[in-house]
Each structure stands twice: as structure tokens, then as C-alpha cells.
Length: 179
Image (cartoon, rainbow, N blue to C red; front, top):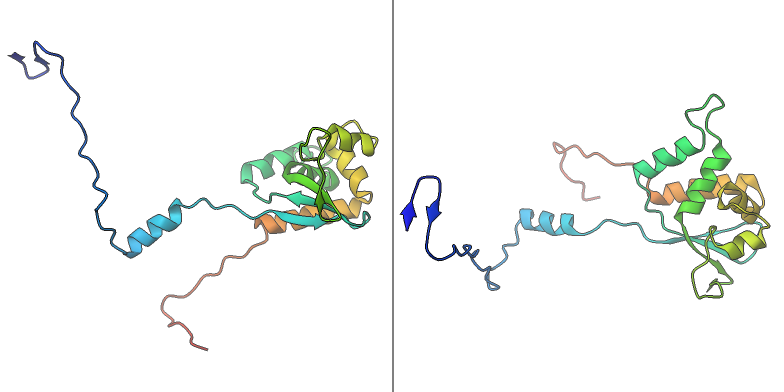
């Protein structure tokens, strides 16, 4: 074997050093740090919600209100936020609804297409029913039937996504109340 400060040469190939095995019997200390680690490791996701379509009795859209800031930015831009005419609120609302809808229900029964797939605003069968060729904004507007309901639904979705939530600050110098 030749030894040099930069490398080692051996007759046999160098075997990688194995990492020490983690022992399953390592006790977990229930500290604030471990509680925080457990809490942070869990994925944060909002629950699905159902929104009634006011002019369509028994019809509800199933929404995933997990909306990122980047999605909001893209939807605002696509709705004309940076144009001379400004943001088209109805088009923006249609984008919010279409992109968060994961299914449609009627009389509490999930609507599936002929192949067993969940129906959304991009489904050909829904565009056929609404006599439209584009999911945005045409299909969403035709589905709801009334523009104010489109905008109200989008506001409800944004509310469920947390965009109207307030974050309470507490003063650590004040003791907790037992009232």
C-alpha cells in the first residue's frame, strides 16, 4: 500500500465506510423540540369543501382549497391584472373555481363520466351540457348561470383556502387568562 497525503493506493479496492446503524431502541425524549419536529413533519393541507350552486338545486362542486400564492399570481395575471383594462373579476373567479374543482355532485351523489372519471369543468361531458367549448371562463359561467354567483363562489373558495384568515398575536408579557 502506498500512502500519500492526497490519496491512498491499495492492492484491493477501497470499500465504502458504512454508516453506523440507527438503533430502533433509541428512546425518544418528549421535549418541546421533538414535539415541534413532529408537528412540522406533517403535511399541511386544507380539507375538501362542497359549494352549492345556488341556481342549480341539489348541485354542488367539490373543491380542494389548497391554493398557492404562485397560483393566485398566475390567475390574476391571466385575468388581465397587468393590462390597461385591469383585472376582470369574473374571469379571475372562473379561474379560481375551475382550478380548484375536483368533482361535482348532484343530490349528494358524485357525478362520474361514462369512463368512471370524476367530472370537472374541463370534462367534455360538462362542456357539452353547458354548450361551451372552453372550460374558462365559458363553462364555469354557464354552469353557475349568474355571474354574481361565480364571484361569490370564488370568494368562498379563497376564504376556505385561508386568504381571509387572521393570525392572532399574543403578548408574551401578559399571563394567560383562566376566564
